[in-house]
Structure formats: structure tokens, C-alpha cells
Image (cartoon, rainbow over all chains, first blue to last red; front, side):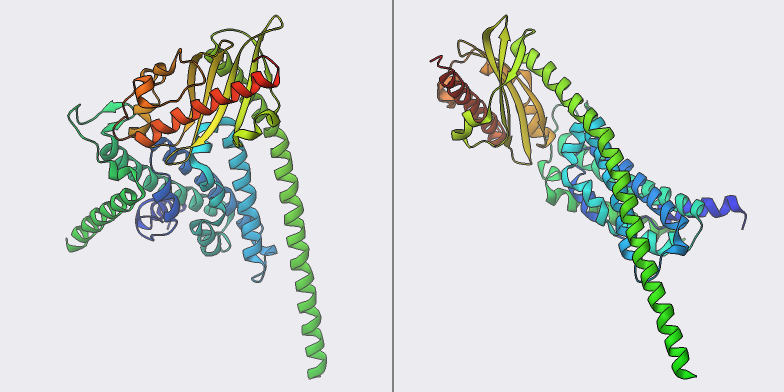
Length: 203
Length: 200
């Protein structure tokens, strides 16, 4: 396999084929909690992508120094450093979004997507491939956040980025903005994806 | 022979353990260093950006360029509000009014607002700095049309719907009441501030 194809494959795995949220169903906490607006989802996606990419890179770079007994401690130290940096930068440059995301930015430190990628990919592969894997997983996670936020905003408010989609007669489905609405939206999207996958496989 | 091998294995395992501890130690020291550097870099900027936002907002709600002096928290301890800051607006040594920066709990998290109150005890203007309510609830309450209804109100007064002519906003009753309550606390805080300075 050529190196370009290999990179494309890794990227496709993280974003589509093996999307951490829609296919592996892990790291769902922020997907359900912060998708009340597309802006929040976008910023959370960027924060997550930065943390997973740099954590993958560092762990892969120093993999020969990390023993099996201590790897989990090292993973958590590395992830925590990047989460702290991202959190501090958000507080300075995007204070309103940072307050709105609340505890979910620090909680990236214990996100199982990152720990699973460090253990399954970064510790075995080279630094460059690990970075690509981090970016692909981050983009996949961000896409999931944005899609859920988009559906919730449209149905819950009838507007998107200030534009009224359904006209003034539309009565917003307030349920979609509540935590129950997050589960409902996520379930509908999962069902749609499974329907598409099944249809493709049947062909 | 077997004993020798066992001893060798135990020495190797000891060395590995020591090496692992050393690696964790180095990782912790490096992490501490990196976080400290970023913290130093961001703390100053964080304070500056907060100050600029506050100053601009304070001037807006007081409709003028004043010197703002933060009052001591202990004056307002009876209000039992942790997130309350009161500023005196001073112009050429004369107190022209007060600004109250208050954070209260809404349905979905904190609501932070700043209100300017003139020296004669009239609400001048109110700005919502932060809220986490859903956009539907938020847009009903956090707009100028709603907040303008509080302009010109005196203190002390009860913020009942009848008194200020506000009907409960459908679908956002709790949020709108939270804003009213916050303004009520702000007015009480001004009473305490004036009392502490012997102005009553």
C-alpha cells in the first residue's frame, strides 16, 4: 500500500468508517451535554482534536521509554497537560464559550476515545501516523458533535445562525434542547446511519 | 545456576522499576514546567481581558465615563451572594451612581448581569454578560425590550409583575423571574452601600 493510501485510510477510519461516536459509541458524554449550540460543538471539537493529536504525537515519540506497568499513568499525565493548556487558552481567548462548555473541557482528560487511541495506535505506530490518527479521530468526533448540535438547534429553536428556517409559524420543539432531546436526536441519527449502512451492505 | 538466574532477573526487574519511576518523575516535572509557563502567559491576559470587558460594560450601563472603585465585599455579606461585585461610579470626586455585577443560577447554569444604578436610586441600564439558558428561553428574556422595562425603576421596591407591569413570559417564567430577583438583590446591595458610606 502506498504511503498516501495508508494516510487516507487512517483518516477515513477515524472520520467515517470507525467514527468514535457513531460507530464505536464511546465518548458520548460531551456529545449529549454540550450540543445545545453549534458554536459550542465546534469549539469543543477543536479542543478535543488538539488534545488527541498532540497526546498521540508525544506518546508515540517516547513509546520506547514507556513500560506496560506505567503506561496508563504516563497517558494521563500527557493528556492532562494538553487539556490544561487548551482550557487556559479558551478562558483567555473565548471566555464566554469556555464558561458555556464548563466542566466538559477539563473532562476531556478522561475521555475514553483519547486513552483508547493512545493504547491501540500511538504506542505501536510512528509519530507521524499517530498524529494523522489523532487528527482523524478529532475530526470524526467534531463532525458528530456538530451534526447533533445542528439537528437539536434546528428542531429546538427553528433557527440556525440567526436565520429562521421554518418561518414564523414554526413552534420550536423545546424537548430537543433538553438532555432528553439530546438522547432522542442521537438515537435518530444512529438509526439513520445504520439504515444507510445496511442498505449499502445489501447492495 | 538457577539461583544465579533468579538473582539476575530480580536485579533486572528492580532496574526496570526504578527506570519507570524515573520516567514518571521526569514526565511530572516537565508537565509542571509546561503548565506553569502557559499559566503565567495566560493569567495576565485573562485579568486584562476581564478588566477591559468590565470597564466597557460598566461605562455602558452607567452611560458615561466614570472612575469605578470596587467596594469591599464585607459590606454585602448579609445578602449571602458569593458572586456579587459593587462598584462606585465617581466623577470629579462625587459619587454619581453604582454598578452591580451579579451572577445568579438560572435553569441551565449561571446568569451573569451588570446593572447601573444612579445615585438617586434609579436603574439606568442592564447588560447580560453571560447565560447558559437554552436559546429559546434566553432570547425571550435577554433582549433589550425586556431589560428596558426595568429602566427608571426606583428602589426599594418589590419586583412583582403587577408593580412593574410585566406579565410572566410564557416558556421562560423561571428565567425571567431569576433576572428580576437578581435586579432586586442589586438594589438591596446599593442600599447597603449607601448605608456603609453614611449616605442614607
